[in-house]
Length: 332
Image (tube, rainbow, N blue to C red; front, side, top):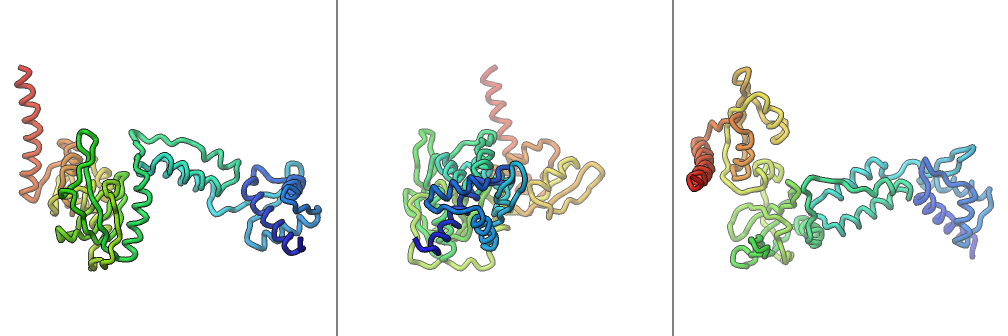
């Protein structure tokens, strides 16, 4: 084998071996490196390995040396720190839209970015309360396909469904294809949503990606989004439900300040009314999930305006009360 070819092989073998089997706690000895090179039919003397390590450093690999008992060579700085990999593994493991199979595959790839010793620390299970992994492997690829359509500004077609009580798919619009110009993807409450211009309804709408099937990029160019703002659209849609947009004014108990700042962001204005209350005006789309969230805050919140929102919330409260009044009457 020509000398130049042998040298390239040596460097490749050493680089891979160091990346996979060494870290600060597990340096590799000269003997271990020589043994690995012999396994690849690229034997090397002691002095040449020192030279090889210097070449790897010049090529950008952070090869560190520790002298003395238990010393050797190891990879110092990596593209990802171990703490960063742990965060990524936790995010993948706890993500609901990824199947267990896809989660395992992605975690395996993340483990390859660490040494085999560090990878053992990444093999852990993250418990997230009531987390149910999806069974639909296609979501992962649908998201990628939608990103491509957004980048190419192409109209897409798809079918959209919901599940009935028999766990069967029921396609909306009688099974007709949706024609949508995709504007952006939204990650909200453990679900992916596509926001875009619905060519049939002639307005911007959003759709759960895991309920979309047969996604196809058409040759048609998409509709110009103009000044449409993805961040603003997401912020206004509580729980990504459709509803009636408004400027909703609320009167809240002072201890709820943190609750509203956490949910709606630091940009909202809390106006002190007295020592025990503040008012806040929210620019949002009023929907059933929002009313449910507000109901959970109990008597600490009062809807002040607009008048139709006050009346709608009152009617919803009355409807819930009627259910329990009827049940109580039947029991009597």
